[in-house]
Every structure is written in C-alpha cells, then in structure tokens.
Length: 114
View (tube, rainbow, N blue to C red):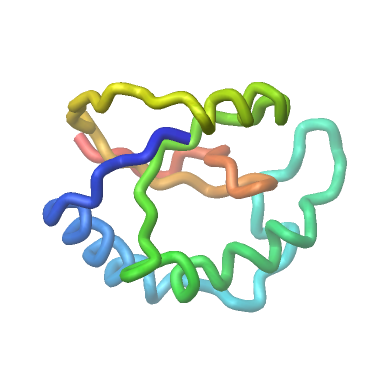
C-alpha cells in the first residue's frame, strides 16, 4: 500500500462519507453480500466479519488513508517495508463507491463522481 497524508480536507471527506453511508450499513450480512469469487471459492469468514466492524474499528482516530496496490510475495513486501520512498503529490480526479469482494477488494462499481 501507499500511505496518504491525512490532510484536513481528506479527514473532512472521510467523516462526511461515513455520515452519508451510515444508513446503509448492515451488521448481519453474509457471504452473499459480496461479489462472489470468480473461481467459485467461498467468501472468507474474515471478510464477512471484518466489513461490519470497519467503521467502528478503523475510522475517525483510527483512519489510516492509503492506496491498496494488491497482493505480493512476502519477500517482496519485506524488502519494500525497509525501502524509503520519496513523497509525491497527487490529486484524485474522482471518487468511487464499489461493492466489495473477498478480502475487501473493490469489485463492482456502484457510483462514481463526475
């Protein structure tokens, strides 16, 4: 993952997003709530239990903005963890909402800003 600076504007967007989605949060969802794995394997129980508690456990003071890049071998991840990268600036051109798949991956685009 790439860490993203926790700016005042990003915190405001984070808090506003939570406020807007709270009415849609479901705590008793199951594996069918997710986009199913293309290979037919079951949605992991860790995914099913992680998502309903995400806002409570990982928001507000625990907010850790980042860009997820995918999966890699542990050896590569270990080498990247000790590498110091030069910060870069970027601007998001849009914001999107996705239905999640296994392991919290964005799978189905539901909405995108203009």
